[in-house]
Image 1 (cartoon, rainbow, N blue to C red):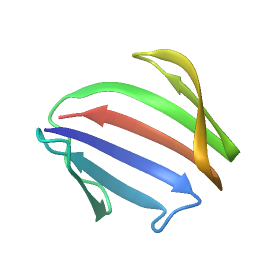
Image 2: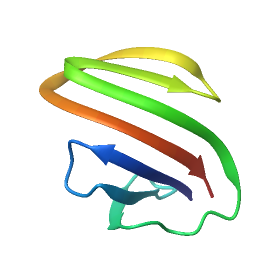
Image 3: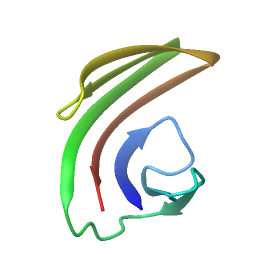
Length: 79
């Protein structure tokens, strides 16, 4: 089970935790859930249909999305 704690502008909550299950599903929770081990940090900027991600684990990525949005977030990934 992977957890992502994010501080962000552009979604439902300013601070949230996303939990990914082993089967590929995910759930969102308001606030910060405890991470027992932090695997990395990331910065994500999504403007219109372009999503830029700067990750300590995976480097820099640019992705194209189907829907238009504006999001700016800082997050930590862990278990």
